[in-house]
Amino acid sequence: MFKFLTTFFLTTVIRSKERGRSVPFFMPIIKQALRKNVALSVWLLESFSIQDVIREFLIDSPITDMKRFVAGLLKTAMQTVYKFEEESLTKYVASIDSGIIDYIQHTQQGFVKNHKVIDNQRV
Image (cartoon, rainbow, N blue to C red; front, top):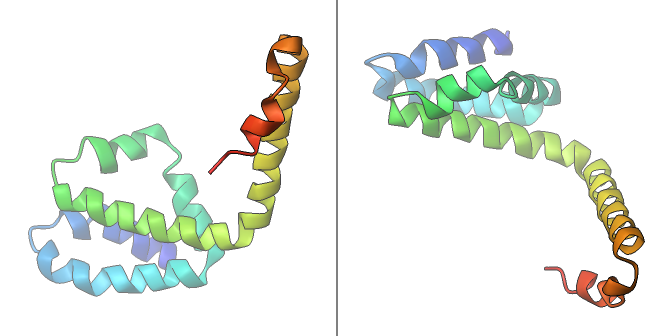
C-alpha cells in the first residue's frame, strides 16, 4: 500500500499545479511510513539507485520543490536503514580502511613508516 502511495506521490502529487496543498498532506504520512518500515525505506533507496530515476527526480526536473521533497524522503529512508545497518557499515568501513593501509604498506614499503600515527589523526 505504501509503495503505491509513495509512487503516486513521486509521479503525480509533486508534479501537480496544486502541490502546495497536497504535498503537506502526503509528506508526513510517507515519512512516518518510511521511519516505521525498513522494507519500504530499502525499496525507495533501491529505486533511486537507478541512474535514470536519479536524473529524472533530482537533476533534470524543472520543479525545484520536487528535488527538495525527494531529497527529504531519501534522507528519511537512509536514516531508517542506517539504524539497522550501522554496525555492519562500521565493520565494512573498518575492513576497507584496514585493507587500504595493508595495500599501501605492501606497495610502498619503507615510505609509510608513520602510517599508524597519521591513521590515528582521523576526525
